[in-house]
Image (tube, rainbow, N blue to C red):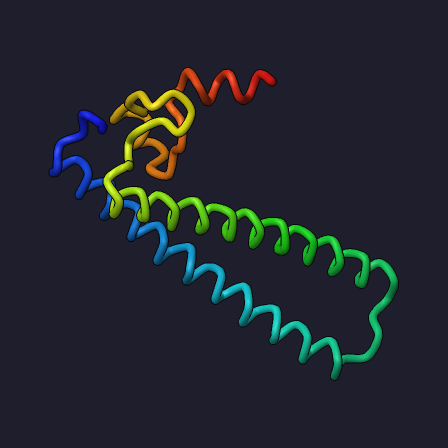
Length: 122
C-alpha cells in the first residue's frame, strides 16, 4: 500500500494514459513510414553504395527508436495495470513507496530510487 492520494494516483494515471497514446501514435507513424520506404525502395533504381549505406544507418536508428518506444509502451501498460490492481506506487523490490517526485518524473517506475540505484550498480 502506498501513501499516494487518490487524486495523485488519478493525475499519474492520466499522465500514463497520455504517454500511452503518444507512444501508440509514434509507433503507428513508424509503421507507415516503413511501408512507404519499402514501396519506394522496390520501385526506385539502385542508389550508389554511399546512399544505400546512409539509408541503412538511418533505418537502424529508426528501428532503435521504435524498440525504445515499444519497451516504454510495455512499461506504461504495466504501470496502468498496477494502478488498476492497487499496487501502483509500491517498489517491486522492497515494497516501500516509490515516491511522488520519482513517479512524476517517471510514472512507469517499478522501483524506489534506492532499489533502482542498487540495481544499476550491479
